Amino acid sequence: MVLQRVVRAVIMGPPGSGKGTVSGRITKTFGLSHLSSGDILRANINAKTELGLLMKSCIDQGQLVPDDVMSRLILSHLRTIDQSSWLLDGFPRTVTQAEALDDAYTVDTVINLNVPFETIKQRLTSRWTHLPSGRVYNIDFNPPKRPGIDDETGEALVQRDDDKPETVTRRLKSYENQTEPVLEYYRSKGILETFTGTETNKIWPHVEAFLQSKFSSLRQKAA
Image (cartoon, rainbow, N blue to C red; front, side):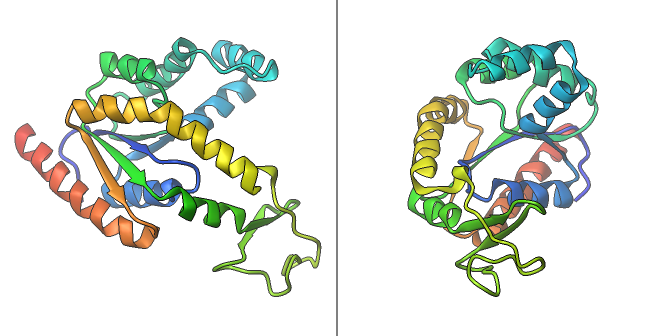
């Protein structure tokens, strides 16, 4: 689908919700640029920009990056692609960040992936990784040929700390507490669209159909 005007969208969803997969399909189908706040942050840290150094200092001290610093970073990047349609992933994470984004741009739609936490816990805690290569296996649907062993090297697989049950539970609770006010903020503005399900492949057709309709409507308004 070729967009006739610049479109700004946000995607939200907890870790393990399939957000990366859905984002990839949205960008491929609709031609939006996928902007990950984590990627932008890492690029600025690696390039040792002023904001990157400031963020690295916060992270090294175990502190949360302040809202105003995070907002400056993302908005600075968005200004470099002002005439492009984009899908923002990982920002905003607080209402203050959402308000800063609203002050600079009109967000057309917010996609929220609502996957039951029990499904995500099962999905994430089933992941085992071959650290040297980054290969990831899932014992439910993509298991190694031999339990606990990498197919290609024969080396041992490990479960990353992020994928251990107690860590997953803590991350999901933190996400819920942090982002529920943001979801409510966008819900009150009438631009939040929530998609509920347990399988990404079954959620995607509904997301695609909604965006087809949404972007067609925006295109007609722009005509």
